[in-house]
Length: 321
Image (cartoon, rainbow, N blue to C red; front, side, top):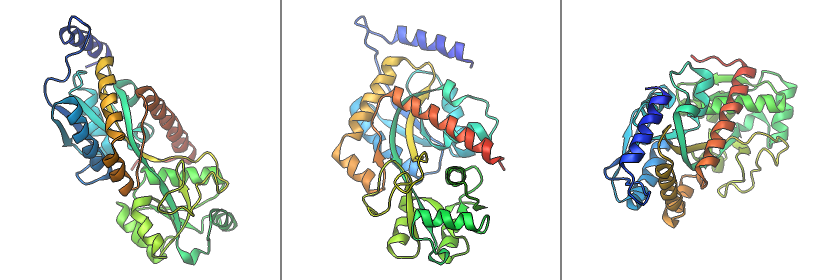
């Protein structure tokens, strides 16, 4: 269905579901959120966390359905082609803003999906094996510049969020680190713990235990602020590397053409959920920060991310596998 067709459906839907007082009758049946990753992953966990609270506010069940594959593009396309009625939503993530630069997609993430709101963001840590001899960010940069290509960093695969953060780090610092892609994060973590690779860009939650155990050294946080779990570790901006704030975020989107009153209602329920003390406690336990805000702010964040990762992919010459 093209955009014009979806817009017509949205207009007709708004007409038949609006009361005489201009209020949209929504929802009158369960709402589905499609997650493009397997159960138990970060996006899945965060979506289920807020879905239960959104359901309370809507007075209808909110069902989470996993449809993994192609870095969440299969789920995104499914939702983009769904009726714009507010009953099929996408659990979006940073991956959705990377994919347009790497793959030939049959839909446009910005055009075909409307932003509802961000849920949360998680910082990344740059960790170094002690044998590398870098105790802070500037030492790592100096070491990498003195031995171009000698230091290696591991990632969970070509084109993944952590890979692109490694390339963005290289661009912003003028360094040359060798990239070692793995099929998943577990082997990458294992090899940095053993010293086979020297550097790792990783979601903070997966490596903080190893930092606290002294197995790796955390030299910087890629995020907006320091982590309460590692308050002594500076952000990259504090460490002298500005312009590298790329947190791993999750959010909610709807098919383009979804009536504005429905998008506004969903955003209000999401904001209410994110303000609840128990939600904030559970997010903090997973080293996630809530990202309250309007749908317009979320749309702007998506636009900026797509532009940023597009530049990184082009500059680094990254090709999808």
